[in-house]
Image 1 (cartoon, one colour):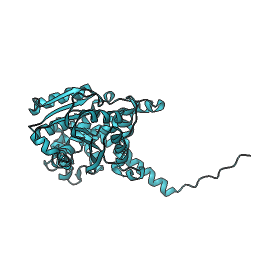
Image 2: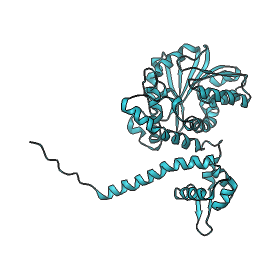
Image 3: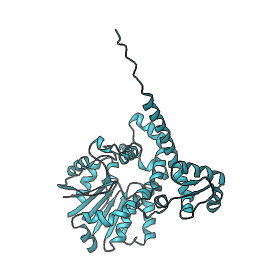
Image 4: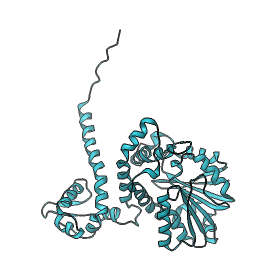
Amino acid sequence: MTAIEEPVAIDGAKLEEFVFRAVDEVGATLNAALVVMGDKLGLYRELAGAGPLTPAELAERTGTAERYVREWLNAQAAGGYVEYDPASGRYSLPPEQALALTDSDSPAYLPGFFQIALGSVLDSPKIVEAAREGDGFGWHQHVHDVHEGCERFFRPGYNANLISSWLPALNGVVEKLERGAVVADVGCGHGSSTILMAKAYPSSTFVGSDYHEGSIATARERAEEAGVADRVRFELAPAAAYSGEGYDLVTMFDCLHDMGDPAGAARHVRGTLAPDGTWMIVEPMAGDRVEDNLNPVGRAYYGFSTLLCTPASLSQEVGLALGAQAGEARIRDVVTSGGFTRFRRAAETPFNLVFEARP
């Protein structure tokens, strides 16, 4: 005899609260595209410091169509990104938002964050299909907004922390760099971290590597533009096969968890380090337990992990799929399995964990 299930009682107030929360989420999803639109069209930059403007004035200043600008401004005002004065019909960008949306040197700079999120959403239909079969989707397969947005998102944090606090937190590394060290920057992407270190330590030489050909081409161009190409070399190579040995420092910025075989990469790092060398690993901020990461930062990183990091790892051999919220304990396991005997958390920010590993 089949048991009859009692109907679940629905709390109408909780349902209504959730529905309106979902409406806000849809607006936030659409706003990612609107922020990228405002960034690419120069709308934020023209608003910054300009005082109150009408849609027509902003459109004229940016060479865009007034009707689009009017709707964009209203959406931005509804979301609290710009301020609207009903009496004058003008819109203004508060200085705090201007800093976050227009100053690429600020650690609070956000357009890249929105750009990589938008690129991830654009590619999400392909991730849906990959999830049906458990297939991977490589970093190189993503749209350009993912690649460019990633570099633009991480670069301000590196600019703010790498030279001033992260490298000094490592035992004896800054002294080596000042004297003249040999450094491998693995998974370098567009080379922002590599070039930043090269500019800060002119006595040292650097080798950046990445498996994505387009990123390496961009990195080489950036090194030429920065005037460090005589001390920086970029090569196309996976993390477990970059060239060279005897490195004083090996760095990996926000990429170890994306690798199919991070333990294999760890073994390769161990084999290429000098006896007294250091491996610096920068990873997304994460606790070891799911419940530690149920917060706004964890939510964003779990989202990126679902759409970018996990598919990237599954597209490679082994496919360990650590995920962007791997946490310190799992990173420690990977590092020690590669032959490292010393591992510690050296520094952290609200968005990153910085680890030091030594033989």
